[in-house]
Image 1 (tube, protein in one colour):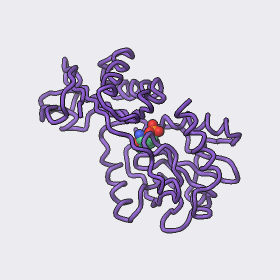
Image 2 (image 1 turned 135 degrees about the vertical axis):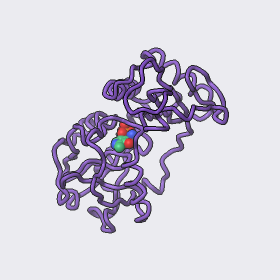
Image 3 (image 1 turned 30 degrees about the horizontal axis):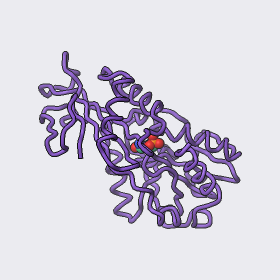
Image 4 (image 1 turned 30 degrees about the vertical axis):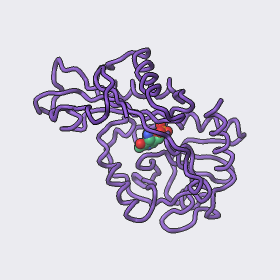
Length: 278
Ligand code: PMP
């Protein structure tokens, strides 16, 4: 496996970052995960735009321009044999003596790697996944795709320890998102999602979901969603770059709707597969 680090392509075992990198010391960095189908990054412009927004929000200068990022990712992908991959890109504030305030005159650390993206397991498609409800205990800048993921990590671990695949988080009683996914509620044929604000990471699948719903003739609405509405959902869905769109068929040990992936999930999943290859 070849990775990119600060201008070089090298074997992952040889890639080294100094211990004073602020990504290591403070989690002071941002990242992106981009699916690549048939060698082509999917929704590349949107992922790059989100990376730029994350960088701007934390005050790290974008180390590369659009052409630079595009070439980097193309070169990385071309060095691996897998037809489908997902690329991880990370920018940290760089290496400096430990002090909370931003250092001056420090170059960001730029890292990227790619992994094989195997098809989502047929068993997951057939039966859906289970989730648990959790209070959202993260900070108030969840719109930034920060590498500071301790809140997300703790939440996912609670889900795993409960035998579930993901959590569905609530802040002040309102649905936010999963530990690494956006959550959608289907009720009477309409797809509902939480507003795009500072309390969720706006997944690239937010925009995609709107397109897929339109194509499938399904109304979609973004608004605040209370816990009771999630419990009463006909279907519950999660989306992410690596999970695409999955049905959550069990929440807190109880079946969601019929307890099986529902017809709306089916239509959206099909539309997703078409969009992937379009
Ligand atoms: N929310 C969180 C917290 C995430 O980590 C992810 C995965 N990147 C998402 C939502 C979904 O975003 P996307 O559709 O861009 O993968």
